[in-house]
Image (tube, rainbow, N blue to C red; front, side):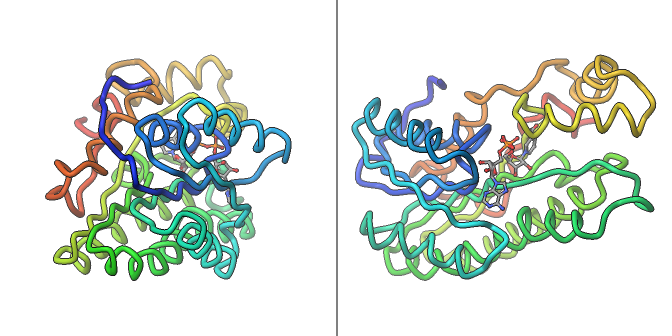
Length: 266
Ligand code: NAD
């Protein structure tokens, strides 16, 4: 857990894709600072309920769960309406849900392209367009999009992901300009490699596409990209998030906090 502290009591947040990995860590970071939260994401019902109950018990905040699938616009609309109805307001929206597929462009399955664009990019559009009127009425809001170092740089064999994440960065900047005078900010956090289920599951595919071992993928592809030679820790992303959602973050707008060990400096 990060040492950064912000008083978020009385605030509420929706975090898409928060049943696993980065989203779960960001949700916990908000709850630990007093924020009521709506979890979202796929997974086994018992495990999701255990996560929900653990956060509610540990931090004495309201923790709800909504099962919206980011492939479906109507379910995303329902997720935002659910937060407003159950928690009475929506202060923070974190667009985090995402998937990955690693393959050569000429062999990239069209259905994987469509799903990655829908979940990683189009869902951000839908969630924002429903959240912004609520935030506008409140006169304050914070939208944080978990993009990626791949929002600003490419890697081979990740065509859909890189295209979607570059799109998220463009959408972030566009929304920031539109909401700038309403007390709302829209920013991105761009992580480098974080050791989550999403990353673990692409090690074997990357090894196959590049014709190298899985150990070589970790050392020569993933950590090669990051000059620190270290995976990004959850707490380092939570610290960046807490700055952006705080009052001190009011003039960070349309920007990105890159937490990628210097990858993008090269
Ligand atoms: P993860 O696989 O651990 O978690 C992904 C989350 O998204 C899960 O909660 C999953 O249930 C949810 N999700 C997937 N498809 C969904 C759908 N159709 N509807 C609703 N929820 C859905 O992955 P992660 O590594 O924690 O990734 C989280 C975000 O961070 C993604 O947007 C990813 O692109 C981004 N990111 C990850 C890394 C990394 O190294 N792990 C680096 C940069 C950016």
